[in-house]
Length: 548
Image (cartoon, rainbow, N blue to C red; front, side, top):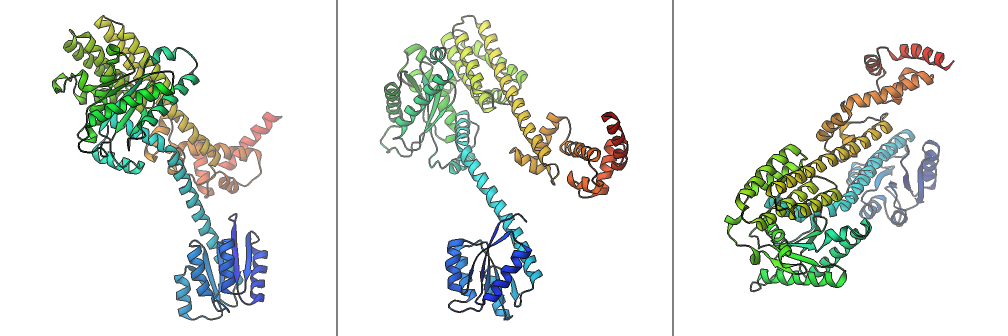
């Protein structure tokens, strides 16, 4: 066995310890005897320092007996295994030893074969426990690394209305968020389109990071504030209000925070920002409405200029009649883009634009504001669908700058439809690339481990997919199911061994992952038309002929 095992031998008789050490050195040299002790007190002290995996404990010893020592070591090292050894076979001793976690109660003189068999069994248990601990540690590390992405996903779901109250509470608890937000702000970098045309991508990303840090600094005094980048030049700020005193107006407090954000960004960077503020949501599930209002308010920068705070109350009425589109209609478009369905997204967007054009025909400025909301919704949906952020930003910026300068409604409609369909295409392309990459990783894992007892579930776990989804995706990308692919890999290796070695067929079967040589021969004949032996004979002759 390859498992590293540290053993502590505890017996008041030196000859007994010497006999056990000799047996271990001869039969299992890979098991390390870390130390010996002549009484229970020495054993406790050595165990605290050496942390052995297995302790042989003589029950009857001077100073401190084995059972007492076992209790103290168990308190220090809960995972340590005990094997109690004694010349006394009383049931009471055995029962207490078992209560301390003893794997077996051995009587002197110890039978060597019994002792080795027990040690091997414990070593196997220890190996399983270590693998489980390593896997748990790996998963915890991966989860910790993924938390920022999970947090961003939570924020995106909140501002897009893709979450129930129960889900919001559950995910907030997982992320350590103690108070759910009820108010949304949008922070938009002024003139970012012109800034983006200047300098390098690294400079743009550094600028965005500096702006984000300034926003976080300005919101640090607001308990529970959530800050996240949502598009190329925008940041969402979601605010809980539980900490506000009853007499303090949330609207006024949010405006003051927005002014603090503008000051902080202006102080820390060479750019300015516009802060749009939505209205207070009654429930966390209404936060998408507050965010949409913040987006719409921020767009009034086009009329009022940047570097200021604009509240939804100051630029639009509270009447629900002013809302052109039901939330469901917008969500259906977002879902089509999120799934990368170009034709469906095009049809839904066409219907939405037709309705907007009919209702807003005499108010082109308001129409542009509504379309900006639609583009922002589509961009967020594309990001959620996994599209490349840079491509989404480029499409969104290009589309916004194009249609804002158009006065022809028909041209505006066609331009926007094309951009929204392009966003759906970006999602589809990104998904195909991601799926191909995942299946390629899975294929390499199969080819590196085909000799093991591989299962679909184990391979799916390697790429963090559910077995059901992995199975469908594997067949979609590879054109064959998991079992057929694994079989082809194994048989390819088997043919190489048949042609290039003199190994028996049974040994080759074992090497390529088949423990039953008869079953291997059946599979081989079904695939190749020959049994392995016949293939070796015919294929070997062909191989030698081609070599000559």
